[in-house]
Length: 110
Length: 114
Image (cartoon, rainbow over all chains, first blue to last red; front, side, top):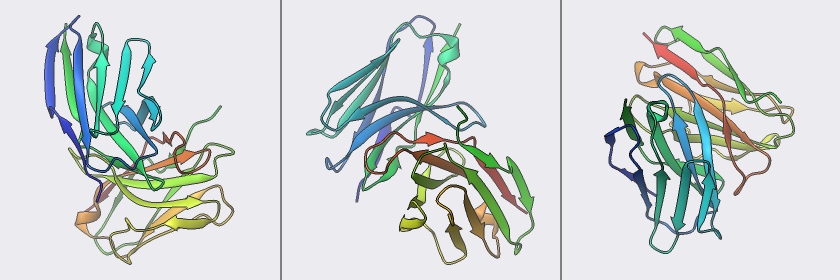
């Protein structure tokens, strides 16, 4: 059974810091991995999608990597801003459906 | 273009009542997914449709939950005899195709069962 774990559960950093969020999964038979952002009381916004054949994807200040063999992905956020404060969720695509981690709640202090 | 929409945004009902939650996917997306998110947790898969048929309903918790997509576009999640434990945010997503395509999520329906 596919399980997804995110560490840490919560993170607080000062503005301007670079940071890394971690995601691990138990079954390497995935189609892709998606990182999402969720603001309080809102739906999910897709940030990055990495196909299983890819190693990384970049969008602006965000960079996501994927190491399928070790079952790990990282989301790197450069020069963090208070507007980055949200919950970040990773999810692996497994037989069509997404399996989610529990998320990392990020607070960026001005 | 329009994203995934869900109605209602909030639904409060009493224990034992029947509810319907609606999802309008992105136009042209053949795959549609339902997830449920409890407070402080990641979303959990319920069911997904490819076209009109349910391709995988393994996440439905019991037979009180049922979903349809009769014309391959709009979907309705139906919950009979609601229980307090059904309270959660119900999220809908769609993708161009299943199996590896990016999923786009709606804003969710917050269901509260009193």
